[in-house]
Amino acid sequence: AQSVTQPDIHITVSEGASLELRCNYSYGATPYLFWYVQSPGQGLQLLLKYFSGDTLVQGIKGFEAEFKRSQSSFNLRKPSVHWSDAAEYFCAVAGGSQGNLIFGKGTKLSVKP
Amino acid sequence: DGGITQSPKYLFRKEGQNVTLSCEQNLNHDAMYWYRQDPGQGLRLIYYSQIVNDFQKGDIAEGYSVSREKKESFPLTVTSAQKNPTAFYLCATRDRPNPHEKLFFGSGTQLSVL
Image (cartoon, rainbow over all chains, first blue to last red; front, side, top):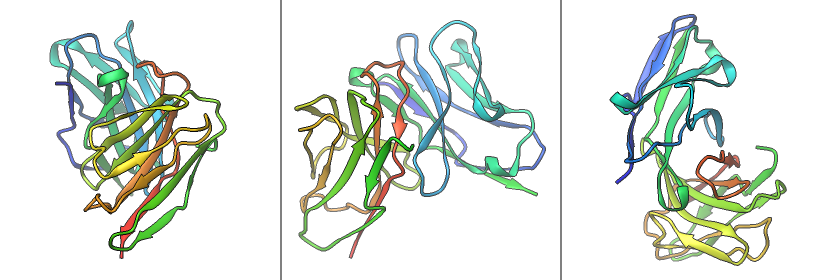
């Protein structure tokens, strides 16, 4: 069965430091992968997505993610974190019936001044 | 997302009561979805609809019902059979029900039990 694992429940980084959020997926075929961000009490917003081609994808707000098939990973990165990046981040794979998204449990990011 | 309106923002349910959450979209999207979010659990799919007058159960459909009589609307009813309804409910849409299409989300409804 398809699944997504986000190993880190909560991460705290200092403002200006680099960030990497981990995501591992389980899917038999070439996956469609997504990263979404959620501010408290709000819906989710798409940061970036990967379907094929270049394994390093660029997204909004300065985020990027790298698809590594050999490691079944799709980690999210940002070189320098801003206080406004504090939110919850969800990795997802389109692998359910009808291509529905399967979400990880999320990683909450806190940013220290 | 400005094109998806969920109401109300907060809802309280009494024991044995059915409540209905509204989701309206003006994006002209074919597919609509309902997700349930519990703290630390991610999002779980309740129901989805790929076209008007058709819908399918997701992973946790028990205790919920939906209808899709109009393209713009996909209301979710939380019935008294749902014993643990307290959660944040998110409605989402997709232009077409294809796996590479992005989901657009509403701002959610927080349901609590009195």
